Image 1 (spheres, rainbow, N blue to C red):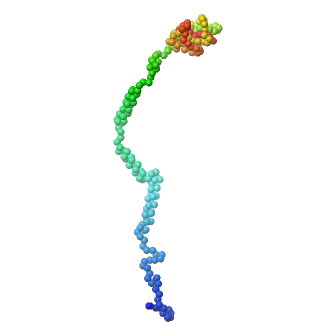
Image 2: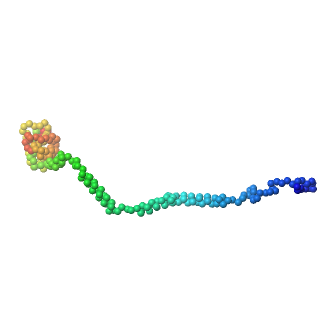
Image 3: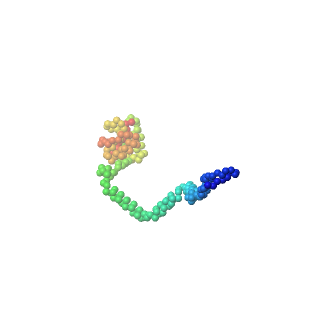
Length: 214
């Protein structure tokens, strides 16, 4: 065993420790060579962040992401290549629908009753201002019938006479007419003279007579 001397003193045997066989490569604060993946990772992170920032800026400017705009463009292209219906085919379809509708209406039975058809075919009453009209004074006012006669003359009546009563009188002013054909004329006479009571009577002295009681 090797020995050493200390200042000429007695030799002591040499003791081996960890420093006699140091490990290979740097130790302590020194690190060994890093792998490729560890060295590339920071660059990958920078690239990913740059892509995300670019996508965010694109969405803020255009309002949509690139793949959404691509999908929209593809839909437009597909729709533009679809066959369009011609105007002639649309017109023919509309014509067919109209013919079917008209045929359906023609096949439905008429809901108009016979009585309604008969009433619509009958002529409406007509006012005849040439009809003979008698104005009868049932009041004690002298000249009252003549005044009312002038009202009818001014309205266009050409055969109006003012007379005094003969026989029984009604309780209220009344316009009487003989035939149904004179009903419209009697109603107009009553309207002109302010009379509300209109009735058909076989005892009327003329086709139309107005009996004034007030």
